Length: 155
View (spheres, one colour):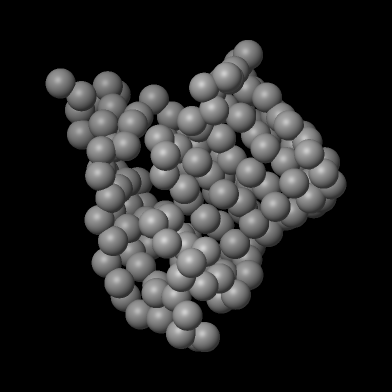
């Protein structure tokens, strides 16, 4: 699946949910922004080819990179790094699932737990616990490999 097919997939999966706020900014053949909240641009993701996605939500960045072991601490500092195995065929659906989980919620806090080092030793492997607030009483905790999102009802 190339970038064009990814754009078609994301449009079919997310435009029905986000409506007119959804837009695609195709910068280059290997660099595309998918904006989910219109002009606000606080909820979007960027495709860097087919195996690297950065999802931005409430000033937090989730990194999905099939070349994870090539990243160093300066690449990942303060970010939420997915440590699961990345299958580039399944990654688009993983991103859609995470977007739908984060929709209609906002960031409260993040706890990081260092679990080890990547093979080069130049970055830490972490587990993340994200606290988010929501108005949806049906939202349950969500786990994606080393990332857990726990929801608190907005008061």
